[in-house]
Length: 199
Picture (cartoon, one colour):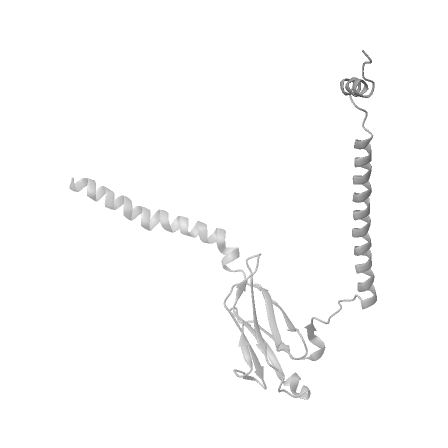
């Protein structure tokens, strides 16, 4: 009995000290690319309307060990700042944002403000609060309002044409069904009803 326990202990020791470490090294090598993966984000300044806060939005970074904040003249700001939560993207990367309420700031001071994204790998991305860099809901992205209105007209015309084709098809189907020739059996019954036997 004692010999069996000694053998079992020796097997466990061998497994834990030899095999486990071998497999651990294999799995670490397989996962090295994801373990060492670092992706820096693209950072944008966003604003819904001229009176709303300016959001500094970072997306597509990995891993999720990152901080983002606003600063002025090198000093981190805490007032007029609202931190959003970190969210996952569909590809396994992450996104986060931090808003700055600029309603009380004079326009000439805007360039003193910076959004700082700091990644765990030590990289910094600094984005200056420049009105020319802020993307808003009013951005046309290269489409003039006349082109936009014209595209709506095309869509409405296409929908109307499809509806008209559907109505014409339905009417033609109904007419064809109404003109359907009765079967011979029904034709003789109909003939007898119309021409009763004079007997």
